[in-house]
Image (cartoon, rainbow, N blue to C red; front, side, top):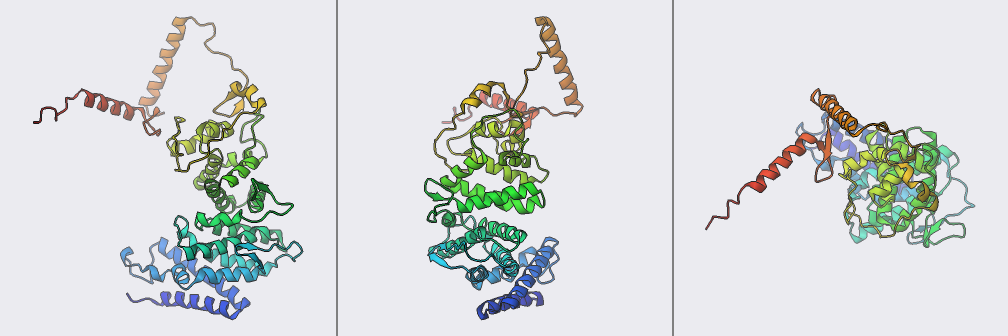
Length: 435
């Protein structure tokens, strides 16, 4: 297939980026990276609208090799852009996958931080397809090297706080695109005297991610763009690494002692994440719920205890867990250790008073049927059934029930399934008389 002028322009962009990297042209490289990102975004918009001037109108005719991200990856873009990051951050290596963190070093200049951010945007786009793959040995070494540099991005300071936060956000986004098996370098760093740790694993990087996430939750600006990558990264790391999950659980879901307020009320990390579970943005609320669910080892009872059934219902419905069931393997296929979540003495004293829907201790409500005779209770029950039936027939409400998969379906469908099963049980086996 012949390439259009746009294809050639993209190839030239890649060549110019590589040339600037090899020649050490910092000023030219920054301009080329910015131009590359702008043109890539324009190409993505064209594809979304199926306005493809650079290929034919048929999707089947689209040549993937003209994708700028593919071109750059084929030309060794990962190691080249990793080298750009190392140069921007003045990286010095202590060991194969450990960057020397010098507390006396000056903060990263704003210009260098901006150039690093442009490189990170491209790195995300040329590596995100590898997230679910098991890389070969050479590629695994390459991605671990990159992960170590990205860890350094999360640890260094910049001249301006906003620049540091932008750098951390892009670093977290790129980490979420790398193969999970290569992220062990984030916690396999020797401990320093002031390190955050659990079971001997270095949690400094995880702690910095938590601090960044908490600051963004407090600010409440561009919540989806800034929090979704971090929530995804922490959830995936918690699934893959037990010590990371234990540390995050200590920080986000400490043992529950007080249930006098609703889980979404308050300023703790748990309160803020539970509030996100009912956010208008579907992706964001799913990411927040998924992280909390993983920290509860995907145990429905524990999840409801910390979030309230009302807040948890969305995720449970999506996964077919509204009935509270849990298989030996978690709903995501991850197997967790069997350590139990014992209730604190304070929680045991109030446990029976907690409303599982709201997750809050509520005052005992007056029984509306108190003082009624059995006949009056039966009459009231019939009245309520009649009202619900009328609302259902008028399509004001739709009664729902749980099917065998734990998913909500209309009661009419459950009745139809029940009748079909009953009829199939009553039908004689047609094969019985076959000789």
